[in-house]
Image 1 (cartoon, rainbow, N blue to C red):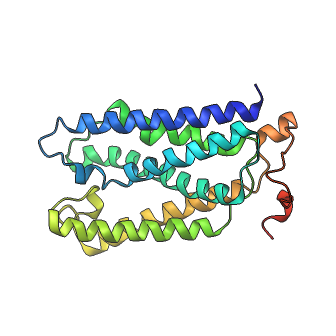
Image 2 (cartoon, one colour):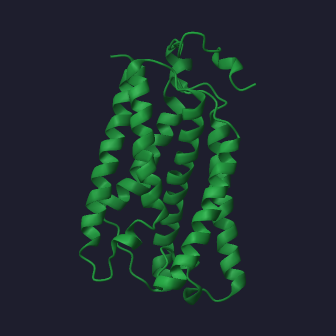
Image 3 (cartoon, rainbow, N blue to C red):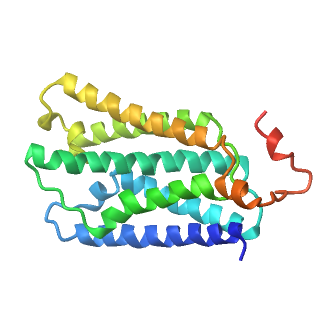
Length: 231
């Protein structure tokens, strides 16, 4: 088994594990009297992990075929990984704030997988796995636009259903408009910063290619060399 194939298997395994964790989290939530399917799918973590499944399957299949990741997949992976990593940081912050604000926050194994384990493994894959090229900087714009759009839609929905996925979006749990904008700006900066970091990391040669001299494969007949594709 080649290194590239091994990472292809890893990506498909991550996709399966993510599906299992999403289903387990949904079933676990059914035990709460306040649980609704609409609120479950309103979480940014849930949405980003659903997309993560699709992207991991695509990346896994291409890796098993032995071809390098195309430019569009590098950019898409950077965008999706920005969401999963940032959501994990936000969740860790919520856990820290739970005690200080006097509310209970349970963390089942499914949440641990979705917020911490999978983002960490996917981040290592991003740094190590051969075949990854340079993500385009426009992925940062995609991430910021999506985050703003999700936040605006969540605020509008919250006015109608009286529920917000995170305390810093709920006006009733914040002391002032200034606190709301502070949390909002911090979250946006987090997503943008993580996205910039991932794009910057993609400018470095994957560790596996440096350590094991993994050869690059031509993606398709007539395809441009990887070094020219971003000009």
